[in-house]
Length: 453
Ligand SMILES: *[C@@H]1O[C@H](CO)[C@@H](O)[C@H](O)[C@H]1NC(C)=O
Image (cartoon, rainbow, N blue to C red; front, side, top):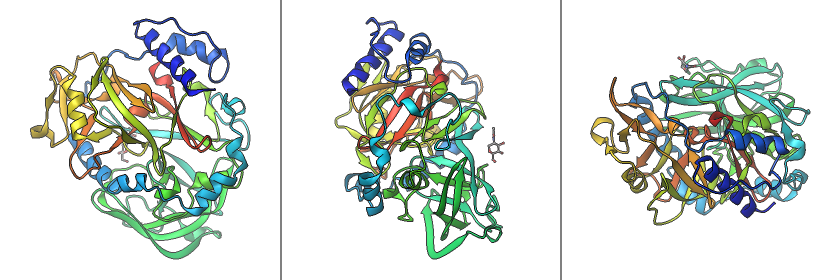
């Protein structure tokens, strides 16, 4: 199926749903039979009404996330442009029989809520909510010979798995390595840099499982020190779902091992993130959950197999282009809550929002406020297609109780952030059911989320 076709279909869907023009095409749907297409036609709105936003914005979380994003993506520009694909990943991308098995219709992979065969697994995720923010999404993995349950933040923006191990000073004591006969300490140091410090310990190996999907000897960071960034987090650790090119351990990720071992039905995983609902989010490993999308997938090519990086070519606000002089690389990052762009691009976006104001004085550099009742249709052009951001998610909360001004969810980053990078976090992914596919040269699939239904 050609990309031109998908984008034409998608654009006509957008136009039709915004009531602007264009009869819908009635050609065959991209995936999953007519049922899916009918749902899309009925349900999806590109500009849903503004609701909620009654919370007052709490800058503490956003400020600490800025520090984390700066640390996480400090070297991203060089990493993306000189992608250093480790040999195990190059071998995998060349040799895995799974890579040629993904059919354009995703036929066999479709599920309706939960995994269907033993080569698929559904991980239920908890959405940790604070005020107007969906802060992070985490779910259970099973580790070691005794299947100890650990919860991990799902992070498509990094490449390491880590959990606290025998760590009395960590917010969660974590994994009891002594209780697992399959645990191995490699003796190598492990550390990852975060906003205010780092997590560190040793590189270890053990059995890791999600549902029926098992990897023996999975490398992970056995962490015995965590920076303060993690004090308020409900999860034990984190699972990196980006390419292992960005893994500080240099080792294959859990999902890459599943591909290598031929354990998944397909070399892709899909993510549904709920809006302001603690349960219902899912990670589908080796599958695509039809019940979480209300429209066709649009595939966006991955431009660098490091982060899930796509070409970010423009922003439109209510149909007006916010000037962008060059294309950027955007990392699709489920481990980040908000949307981050270079300061000049944020300024160009807010220039298109009447009544918006810089809020440097109130909240620090990078923040803007805008009239809460503004009718906004913000669309990002990724790999040539437009993807709308639900304006409910753009609204980070009011500037004060009873205020008519709200804080915008596109944060401008200063000079210490790469000028050619953008980060699309959960705020964006709540509008789009997302698929991370290693086949077809690697691509990100985005389908209108059931959240917008
Ligand atoms: C989010 O996590 C924090 C820290 O563990 C916890 O106190 C809070 O209750 C959680 N909120 C929700 C809505 O789950």
